[in-house]
Length: 200
Image (cartoon, rainbow, N blue to C red; front, side):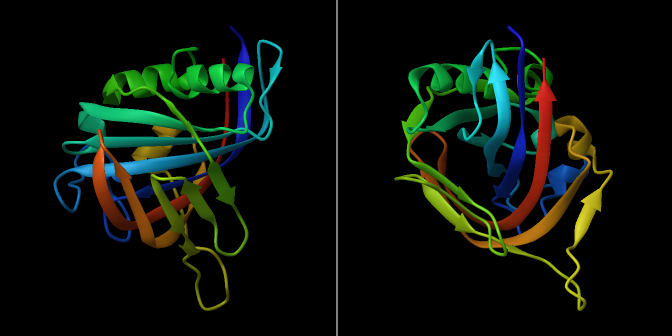
């Protein structure tokens, strides 16, 4: 049952500029509901002897209110380039079925899971990070920077603690648009960039 994954991630949601759910349960989403995706690229990982390096997973969810209030619905999109063994382990880890941080976190905020789908998932980094799931959605992010070119970062937000993310870069995600028959259709501006390292 032991596993470990670390890498880079990005988050986008239906709110403008910066999603208030990051700040805690008192935050009110712009549209009273919140839809979001997390794109994860595993740079180093192993689960029961299966090498997970290079794995790409997009978590998509919809909440009727603030993230912390729960009652969310979710689905995982796993890159179809992954082997059958990698798909199985990535799905188990990122849905929380294999224990660890995500078991408790998603157990608290996700009430129902739709079956995972295996699609072409593209995640790119650099000056303008991008994420794309064939037939579902795509986004091109523009990180916020000050006049000297220094990235705008946030640390100490409540949801960062929930995800065990120490710091994140704020970004503009105006080109983000997503659609799923079970989770709805949405566009949004809010985007963040981070790294993750989890194990169980």
